[in-house]
Length: 442
Image (cartoon, rainbow, N blue to C red; front, side):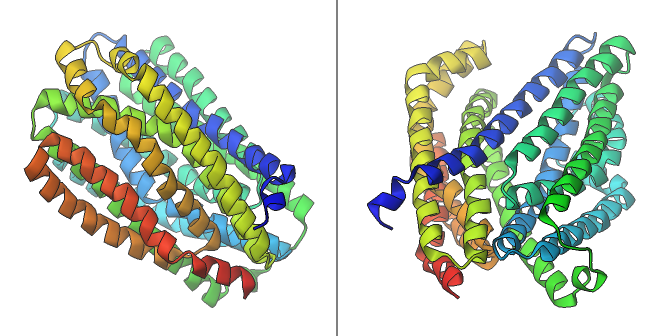
């Protein structure tokens, strides 16, 4: 890539046009969590807070596992868009919606088993588990809407309309907050009110999303073709990609769950300190995800258009801004890290323990940025096998580092293992990156 291409203002404008809606959309999520906690926090018994926390945790893991519905859709839509094939764009969306409907039906059928397995792994009081069950059995009816929305989000990012994704997310979270206040504070529905507010918001967000999709399809053109939608070869390809991403995501979930489980062995104070510092990683993800998502849509479009020169430009430009934002996060954590810890907990022992680990969090954005960004590149390129294989290698390296560093440095070693995990994730994909450029030249 030439210097003039890197300093081309249109590329930088396009990156920010796609990234800022995702950053703002992601930032609305902790606000919703805070409101959920606040409304039940004003109820007379503390077990309500625990019930909502556990219920929300169950759905976080459940839905995170099905995140492939968004990631798998994005790359295929972007590439079809880059080829100018509006009919295939429609077909990719339809296939994703069919798969999401089948999965949602399965989840609804086996919902008692899902709850039983979840509560088996969580040691809560009978009151907390009872409340979590009430929450689960109400919110689970929003599952079809959530999974369908994943497909819609993949579609919006694939056609590079992240503002539509932002509109749906802000509408859903804003409505959820309003319904929280009405159902819990107004009607006194406690945990069930929080769950109902979420399920209703998710369903109405799907309706809005479908309206926005219809508008985009009218603009793009193309037609619905049953033979194209139900193409066995293309449906099989989509399922294979989704399965690869599913394996990758499950290993990612387990890696962070194992991190927390190992910290719990060090005692309640260490566990609480780790829980506080995990918020630093979540905050970091809000910014870095924006540029990774921007890369997904732009990379897919460049590959569909057979533009390896454009692809390389996108890699450099999105990576440049992601690095700038990562440096800003590191600087904020360096200057304000202790104050953020104090804001998140008032327990002196937890504050002191979290401060011991803070240097890792200051360093983390500068390491993590590369795994986030290269994930976006490979999602846009629909190189799912490489992502799956890279994650398997990274997970093995992470578990080995957990054992070795844990023996050498105790809890400090856990953070060292997490750094290894981020580094190996980036390196394993960087090694096979030339395959992405070959896709654009083919």
